[in-house]
Amino acid sequence: MGTRDLPTGTLTFFFSDIEGSTKLVQRVGLRFKDLLGVSLDELRELIAAEDARRAIREEFPRTEDPVRRRQLLEEALGHLDRQLELVHRRAAELAALEGDLAERRARVVAGLERSPSAARS
Image (cartoon, rainbow, N blue to C red):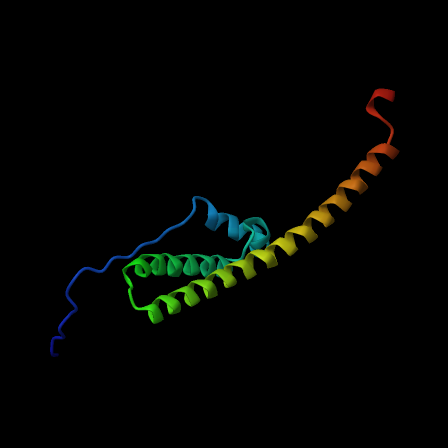
């Protein structure tokens, strides 16, 4: 058997986990989005857009070419628009959730008002 040349250099693996998040996802399953506020894919999109905007902010002051500066601004605008789209969608979902919780609370309060009080026993 011949030998193969192996790659050289450093390979780094980075694993990150919010403490207890894996168990939380296993326990709540699809409700994770409701608890987190965004899906993991949406969170990745938000972070990717923020990273891209950070790179643009670093490049912009060093760029003298007006055409490239305009391209950078247009790219930044696209990333901001996508982030705002995700935030607006989530705001609408939270408003619906707030209405649902308010209705449920009203039913519980009505049930308490109809039930005999503990003081009467």
